[in-house]
Length: 396
Ligand SMILES: Nc1ncnc2c1ncn2[C@@H]1O[C@H](COP(=O)(O)OP(=O)(O)OP(=O)(O)O)[C@@H](O)[C@H]1O
Image (tube, rainbow, N blue to C red; front, side, top):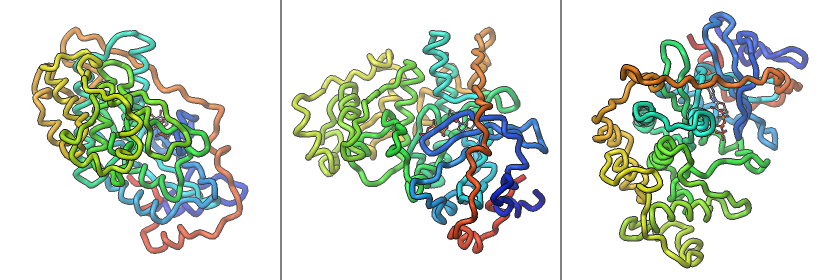
């Protein structure tokens, strides 16, 4: 690959893109709203595994926009132990499709929670929960300090490293991508793919126009509760056809556990578009018996409960920040959090062996690349103004 210049220049109508030559693609490991994820090894360093995320083309086939590329370039500068590294960016010249190569993580919280709930039928130990939460907050504090709001935190986006030097280190994935997906790569929920609403903050459900870092803290609260109980905290049914983002069932699930929000607790509530028009007149009854501690089986005096309730504060302006959460008493109590969330430093503590990701070797990344004659490339006109190897080439 040399200087990496070939990364966006090497595809034609009958060969595989040149950038792909540097990888051995093992198979598909997942499929999300916006595309497929593949496991690959780097040929020059087979010890290193990479997750290549291929973005689906938008319906109108308009490929990846200059705005998206600008955003992605910024994401390449992001570097923190608890944030997954964007190792490389590749653009397939033939169809203008986008491939992001991330450092590979063997586990994610969705699978870890599922393993405890369905396979071993036992709770996650307190040390592991605290270490995961601590690292998640550290990564988020870094992103928020860099003005990046994740917007789509959920268990499958929180990765945990498998065996090796970084074993048990938590990595936030998909940071900043929600903004890139939205335009012009439209979310594919219209195509029947479900976007989960379970971790969505109440202000967004009520139509707030701006995403603030508080929306991520709400999601962290939902994930913390799920780590404790192994069940999603607010499992609302998404109703298709209602004006997005308003989802009454999701709000109802939240109100049942936390009590009905009041203007006293949340003064700006009345200004939210869906509050007056949609919620107030539909809700005949009011939930005022907040029962979060019974749902998560914690005493209201427990510092874990105190932290959780501060993450699930209705008013986003009063909700605890990542920096404040890291300073909470919960993290100063035994067991203290550690860098390896999977292996407790406590002698005699049982280590859980989580299964490795299943790999579907029947789906080939090349089969998903459509090689067509080149299209007029707005993107490359844009790239002409930047340092192309820095954007598209390998980064060592
Ligand atoms: N860097 C990575 N290493 C290993 N697995 C990853 C990596 N990034 C994503 N995955 C896994 O690939 C799968 C699909 O991920 P993807 O982010 O595309 O979808 P999702 O999180 O399930 O849903 P959505 O697209 O709605 O966010 C998930 O199981 C995720 O944990």
